[in-house]
Image 1 (tube, rainbow, N blue to C red):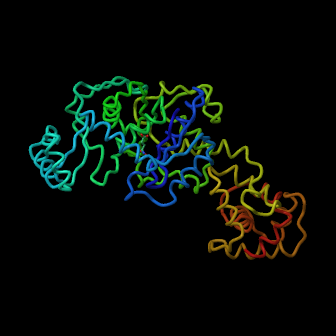
Image 2 (tube, protein in one colour; image 1 turned 45 degrees about the vertical axis):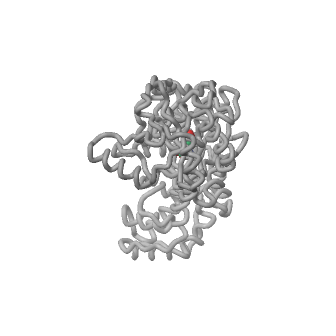
Image 3 (cartoon, rainbow, N blue to C red; image 1 turned 30 degrees about the horizontal axis):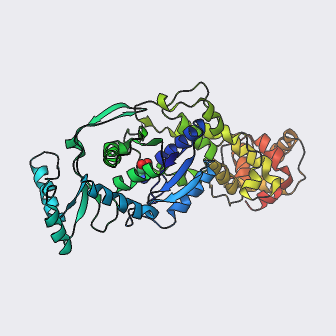
Length: 433
Ligand code: GLU
């Protein structure tokens, strides 16, 4: 089984969506199931409704999954496992106060060395532990750091080797008996029989800790790992909330199509023979192990190019936008010169707004009168000849105000094409201009 494990703590980041897409593809390739695990252990950071939003996004992107579980539903198992580790002496009860630990952290920082747990409570006698527990002293549970190095092979990044010092004796159960992130994650990967973890490289340093937990429990199945390189913005920095394009919701609101976004995210950091493909097609040729190790740069222009390709196939824009079918051809003209659906809709909406341009105000009035008072010719050239003759306007002074009358823009599609498709409702539009 593979899993996608989003935290319901904010808008879905494109990096997360990329992780979901790759998990979906590999699950299909390996004929394995895909589990969605909502990592809701950090109560303070959870945002109500984000879980449903994430699932809706996955549905909208065609990422099918077999099961959804909430990590908080497994707290009792996490606690049971912590107890098991205590009983087998792989974990210990730690009474060090938060203040004590913080002071040690500050000291380590001042001495420019990494903070490590002092080991103070590691060898307390069972009698002492019993006594202090009876006294209701606050405690956490720590996993004893492993005796040997933890090694693993990442399918994308290669070999890793972490020393016990790097892993340290870390907290697995907090004072309120909730599991820490690493503990919950490691146990859940074990109980759902996960075969391969595909996630962002920001989790790389968590991996040895998560392996150490399962090793201590005697779980001997080797879970494989693939950590995806981060996505960088234009300035070469990690794409963060400050970059609008990092939010999947924002991209959808901007009028990027789910198929185009998925296509782009699969392409990112890869090189294939073709650039335009569906998710199903990608299942046939995608190779997780061939992803570039280097961070991938988000390229808005490329995404726009891909979106344009997918927009070509849309022939029912009027229906999509919930407007009269009579406008379909006009929408198609706007589509040809736009990169996103939002752009198309903005151009379309502008057609029905009042003109505010002062430059050709007089010319517009002259042309408006001419058009409204005469019958419209079928042929654009005849129409143009008549309008030119009767108004005396020509060149820029004819075409710019004329385009303004039609679509409320000085520049844009060919007037000839616009005239042809707008003729049935042209007078209506111009009347309100
Ligand atoms: N919940 C983590 C995140 O959203 C993912 C953890 C994992 O995949 O192991 O970054």
